[in-house]
Image (cartoon, rainbow, N blue to C red; front, side, top):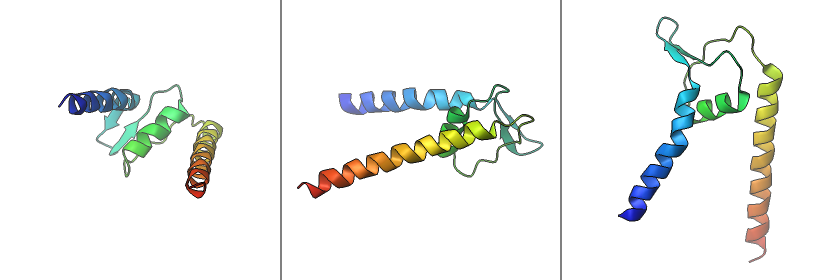
Length: 91
């Protein structure tokens, strides 16, 4: 029971910062707006945790920052997969 409580608390703690990243929901345009100061990594985390959520276009998009965040995420994913494959092949 303690593990379940700890797990639910941990999940809530991890999700809370993601929820804060979306500045507001625009019902007229049916999309989510992000804060004016771009934070590409937070936006990517939000979009990964909320698939199929439309995002309002930003007046000043940081396209290079978004591309860099996606590239870093893909690289980290590839490294983790390679480590897993290496660990599995040693057995």
